[in-house]
Image (cartoon, rainbow, N blue to C red; front, top):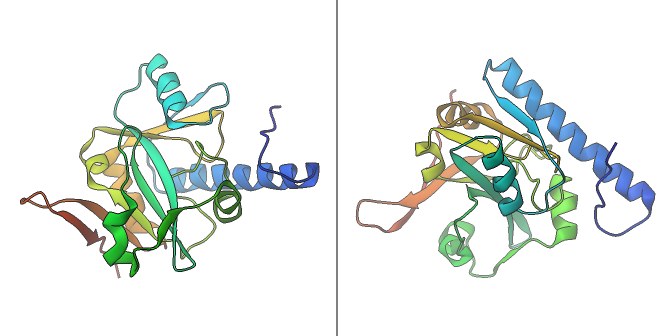
Length: 195
């Protein structure tokens, strides 16, 4: 079995990170099955970037929005941005939302600590931290399908974008979407959760 090389530290740390990512993977599968959401799954060689994942998904004949999940840090708090693989994120657009212009991308060590995942395999949901806020690109929700790595760099999932809306309404994490309004200004909208 392939054991990814996660960060620095002894083999105990590598095993711990591997088991954390396996736990997140299992939690995602269980959530999809519990909610009755159909999904496709492929196994592929290990990936370390969104571009690599996208290439394997294309080889499988998949289409749709391919994910890029970015962990930002502002004022000591973390935020997960979920966008498409080809989109560049300008962290400064979130300064009003996060209450500071001092926003940075999380380090690899912080990414491992918060998500248990290596770059390229961070999933868009299923995280252990139920308070980690999610910010989801509205363009993803307009796609027919959404493709992502489920915390394991050797697998990809594909679900319907409409099902992604259901998932975000059901997870305990705070969820917002971001995009542009009719005047092409950047906007953030809260996702209403059922009572």
